[in-house]
Image (cartoon, rainbow, N blue to C red):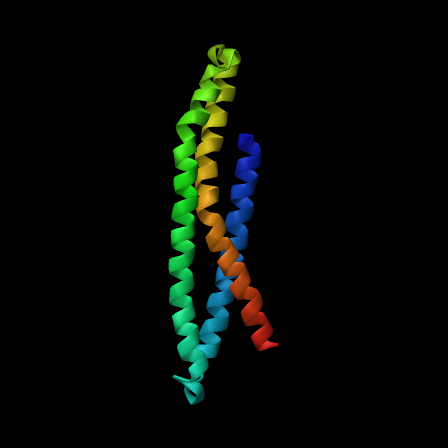
Length: 129
């Protein structure tokens, strides 16, 4: 994937994750702020769900980043093995491609968090409606 495409994907991931996380936090603060329903079964299950989802997303993100990191040396060797990579103009392209690989590691790590945040946003929006 080109560095421009990886950067755009990273921007979209960060935006979607941030927007969904803010919405989820607002919905949960609103739900937990009602003293009449404090410690209800829903609150208890939501607190357990929050913790479990965070741990699951973190472990999935670490696993995805680990896979990307494991593939990184081979991909870097493929970039360096291109004859064009050893020309002045090709060197800059190769550097951009290597940067795209590193951005891809971050994208892989962030995807499970984004998926969890968006899923929670939809679930909590249905509850409020």
